[in-house]
Length: 502
Ligand SMILES: Cc1ncc(C[n+]2csc(CCOP(=O)(O)OP(=O)(O)O)c2C)c(N)n1
Image (cartoon, rainbow, N blue to C red; front, top):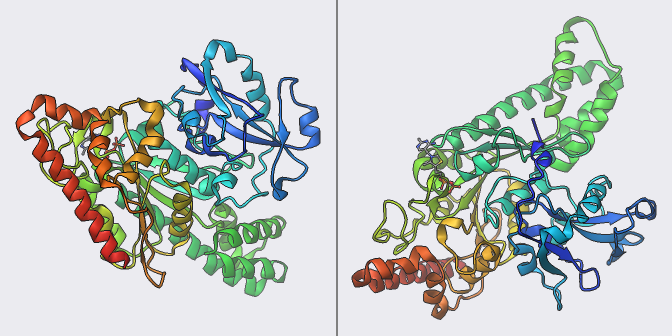
């Protein structure tokens, strides 16, 4: 059952954000980073505004594209987990969000209940922009992820752009647990009844599982094209619509329009004789007319270690498949075991005296194929870079691999889980994590997207996490050497990117 998490209304936050309309600059950053889709911008027409509850205060929506509409940032008090990343990410001169005890905000729920009845207006702005993406409905909401989870905002955004035609193959790990803790399913549907198809395979074969989805979809769609070609040749009433679909079937937006036209044309179309079964096949498979966006999702334990053989094989296949690795640098869901993504010096399970092996560069390994789109992202550091590479990766007619840095409760971040987004920024600023993309179709495929880091901040950054700073307490003899080594490895990695970028 899709979307059942919306019925939980757990009310677990101690403090929830309160929106101050006067300070808001309508950037939608707060909504973008929310791990639980519990704060969303709403656009209203005059009639919708008139029907709103009295307390539903709005402001004039800014920008030409939103002329005539009013705007409100709506908090969902009972589904919020109170992490505070929205407040931390607010870029208004004077913050437009503050935290207040949940008890003082219960009346807000009436406003939320109204907000979700207002039709989504996702066609006004470029949905691939940071602001515009947030006017699209998240089709991942109110999951059971930790407050401040670094993983969910990435996938939430992907559902906002592609959720209506998305298929997900999910490796076992946190994402399969927050993604499908029956009976509370956070993957939901839009007003047309479209939403992501989600299935969790094993920890060890998820890339192969997604590859099977791609093959299955391809077989059905190729059969549709072949049958429709035959039908079009003999049935003038659907010829145009069928040919149009065949011509645009591999173009996402084009296939949406052509599919709608074809479904309409097929409504009253029946025929006997040799084409009867083929027409039935087409009618039975209209849900495959729109081009699918297949996503293979999992953590670093899956991608770097246990599922790596399959992942490598699938990336090498040249098939049109998208992979998103939620990189928490440990096996998060089973309590934080070290993976080959864990950097030197970090304490993790099976690395109780600090990891001794340097972090594997999964992205660059994949880039050696030359035809795999690869990117490293961190939305806390650069949302625009994420939106750009997400659009390119999804549209790339071949394998894509996006690796997203995802701060996790296992890291023990100083400042807590309300700072996961600013922590991502700090990670990039000090050279702990780098942003880049490798686009096989570009003249210069590799592009280093993050600025030159300030490595003098590196040691302070790692000391702001318990997984690193506890090494000194437990193993004072070797701690400094390992801290030095992990920084050197990050620097070497960066130098390699600079060389490629030249
Ligand atoms: C073959 C196999 N080994 C171990 C497990 C237990 N297990 C489930 S999830 C998981 C950790 C997943 O870690 P990761 O891929 O990094 O994802 P995260 O939880 O960090 O998002 C493990 C070890 C399993 N399900 N199958």
